[in-house]
Length: 480
Image (cartoon, rainbow, N blue to C red):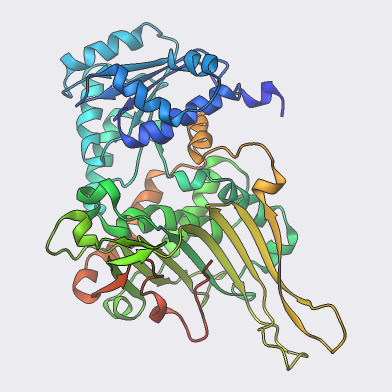
């Protein structure tokens, strides 16, 4: 790819990060921009304004930031000159005047506002930006998930944001959609005749999507106890992956064409009834355990509480009521303090209708494993004969496309792709308002009743969690 192709549609910009001294900004957002800068993709003038409400020590902030940026000293120093730290203790017009004066120095730069703060703060920030005359026709706003804690709060938050920004200016970010293997789902499905012809209920037994984390709630205890695994992971990450797996081919790669097909999937999800909640979903919470020889605290110890019914694990059987996926279950699973950290999508194909190898120890079926993390790869599992005499003895063999082996350069972080898409104005990988509402409407069918209908199952830290009983007979979770 030429330098001109890499920098196409990238114009000078000011990026304002509210919560600019927070963990996400220091670990992901600012380093993502640095690595795009280091790869010569930001050959334009730009400034990064990092807004902090609580801290005022710029030197301490930049020292912490350098822990997450690696490169030649001259290049890092050149980049850091574009990073401006601002202490704005209150959301009001007077305090925002310092930011306005700085932005007004570059009237032709596009203005991008990144809200790396809890969604409860979105309305106040947007109202103040509007009152302070910070927003222009070309401005954009990036919103981190989750957008609210239920359908009602999400509607209220989006209503305030919509007064300040048009839908075309809003970028609702989900970093999972920036991962290379997720990007490759579109190519895998719609550029390969072999897979697209078999991508339906006639050929697929079930689909599994797992996002397993080995860590606990870490420093997010207060936030997490009000949110839980359903809203933290299923409502956004897992549903977005499900949409890409299950969607129909869009007529083009136009952002709205892609998002229209994702919306159809969300509208086709079967709502959970009370009976389904009892049999097709499970909630769990981690207790003490041992991981890699280390003793691990329970969830209650991590949040310093005597009791909590917040789930750290959820698994469910999901139904998509349309022609392509009729009677093909999709199993979703996510949890903290699980045995290993990994995220993948597993397509389990049906067995062949007739087995001419009666002594086989293995079912005659294939599976496609799309690994998202920690190592990104695509793996097709097929049966192959073991060399040597003695009849047909065979075992599963994997054909692997390992991104780290196939592409030797550094693998860009998901935020790098997504932030560049924001600068370019490409909304393909960002949720549209009607997508968000459809996701919340389906989640509401679970969230309204499940605390009464679905008990909390305790699971030991370092295990795979309590998700087995929702599986159909003979089905097992794919583990690594």
